[in-house]
Every structure is written in structure tokens, then in C-alpha cells.
Image (tube, rainbow, N blue to C red; front, top):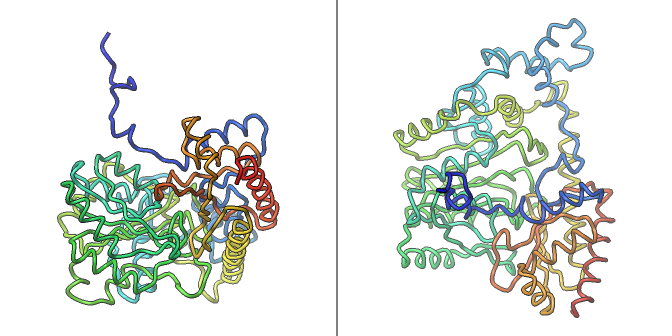
Length: 474
């Protein structure tokens, strides 16, 4: 009998090649243990609300009113909802024929794209065109859409930082392209060396790969570093010289836990540089409501902005966006509220500032607790989490542990993370899922568990690590 189209042997090989470690073997085992009754701490994914972060009040109030507009007709609505939340809900509903249950423009609601453009203009000091901003179902969908536009086949390469967020490796594989790695230097706080970039491009071209774009993640995931303005200038000049599109993953721009290198967007640095580069270098920038102090992961709201992209290409990107009809409409409201929050003098302003500052200050403390905790452990070294939501400690595995893993047919840091999960219930992601230098091993964990739980979690990790190192003779 002939194979059917969805028999495993006959499905698209690119689907098989695409790997996404964040929801891979460790996560599946953690889910099994949870079903068996074991308490699991899911630190494998940056999912703030799942680990106890409280939602911001104002956006939830506005979206609640938009989702149930009949509440606005209740004469007592002002006793439950503040006046500014009621006004924003009425404003959004007036812009959306059919409300939140109807499709929007495939690019997103025009008025919300204007709010995003105004936010970008305030942030960067340069006006932004809402016609070049597309709202998406999370930043990930935007990344996939742009990579699908760039990649024509396996001869097309995308420069991606290693370690990297596996969205990029999986999507490049899915679309049949070639990932071209450039390695971040752990001993230099995960810094980027332009000479290494040039070497990566030269090696790829020697193999017949046409390198077409470069990805930066700023602040870094999983590595947590923040790029300086000088480093961004180097990167932009490099892309200009090599004729590369720059893809700026800036979803963690609110998550910065040090003062030496505040977030600065690629777009601002590009426009500061002036012509000819500011008029010619092609840049796509991504943002989301899933990170920062919002953490609204399940809402699936994001956007991308296009800089110096030719109009005919923008038309093709619109055509592809229109295939999906409409981005998630409630998430578009969340995006509008994120980029245009309560202002001084608004009834909800003080509460909004108190809630958002409280979350960020706690994240800064948790970043320090986790870094210090890892560095107190035997054979564990961890750079401070400057930004984003993760720690990425290096685990110096003993030779016997590496040999044991090989005998079991597992990557050594996978074995370590599985044993950590079984012993403590802490679900992490092995560094091999993000890419790392040969013979070096890591794990990634979020810094998102509740601050009051952090000392106990780190004590549990330390106890496990000490026992592991003793068992394998370190």
C-alpha cells in the first residue's frame, strides 16, 4: 500500500528539521511529572503570569469593557471602572466596526498602528509612518512572516547569534533556509565581535550560501546582555557594507536591570547616523505585549515596523498578511494600551506607575538573586542578567557525567537538566537547545518565579548541583 501524505515518512522534511527546545523533551517530561502529582516550577519559558505575576489593572479594565460593551450601558459602570478606562474603551469601540469579535484590517486597526507610530516617534526622536507598521499575533508571527519573505531556498543564509532563541533556527529550517551562526563571547559578557561576524559571512559564502539578513536580539535571549550604542553602530555599518537586512528583535526593551547600557533601538541609532546609511539600510524591528512588565503572553499581540523597505515589497508583505485575514483584535487593544498608557493627571496613572515599577524593581532584584545563587554553586558560572527574563549559567560538567550522557544517547546538558527536573521539579531548557560552543554546557531558566520563592528555588538548585557534582566525581 502506498504511503499517505501525512505518514511520517512522507511529510515535509523541513518540518522534521525544525526543532524548538523551549517546548521540547524537558517540557514534555515536566508535563508528565505534573500529571503524576509532582510540583513543577516551569522556568523553561518566559511566561510571567503563569509564575504568579499579577496583570496590570488598567489594560485589563479597558479590554474587559471592550469585550463586554453592554457594561458601558449600565448606569453603575462608573462605580466599578475608572473614568479613563471607560473613555478608552469607548474610544476603541468607536474605531472598530463590529467590536472585538469582527475582523480588522489585515495590517491591524489603523488607529492603533498610529498609536504605535507615535510611541516609536517619542522613543526614537524621529517620526514613524503607521503605514509601515503591521500588528501581528505576537512578535513570533511577525518574525516568521519576514523570514518567509526573505528566504527563497537553502542557498539563502540568515546570520543568527549563538546562543539564540530557537524561534530563529526552527523558522529558518521550516522555510528551507540556512542558519549562519555568529558566536557571542561569554567571557566578554556575551559580547559581539565584528571580526567574528565577518568570518561567519566569509565561511558561509565559501560554501555557496548567500547571506541575506542578520538577526540581533536586544536585550539578549537567552544571554541577557544589552547592546551599547557603539555596538549597534558597528552592527549597522556591517550590515550596510555587506548589504544585509537587519532584523531587530527588541521584545525585551522594557526589561533592563542595569543603568550603564539602557535600551536604545536599532532604528534610532540608524537614523542618528544620517545618510546614506539611514536612507538605504533595510531594517525590520519587532516588539510585543508578551514581555516587559506587561507579560501578556497569552494575548498574542505584537508588531513589526519596516524601515527603508521598497513599496512593492511592502505590498507583497501585505498580501501575505491578508491570507490570515486579521491579527488578534483584543491583542491589538493591548498593544495600543502598552504604547499609549495612562498619562500624568489621568485617574489610573498613579496605580499604573506603581504596578509597573513594582514589577520591574522586583525583576531587577530577582536577576541579582539568581545570578548570585548560580555563582555560589560548584562548577557553575553565570554572567549577570543585564536585561530580558533569563539566566544562562554555564555548567562545567565532569568528564564522567559527559560519558554517562553519551552512553544514554543524550546531550550532556540534557541529562543534567533532566536530573535537575526529577530531583527538584525545576523545569529548565538545556543550553544545547539554543546553540553553544563545542564542549561547553549551559541551561536557561527564567528569573520569573515569585521573589519570595526565589531563595528556596536557588537553595534547591544548589543542593541538587552539589549532589550531582559529587556523584560524577567533580
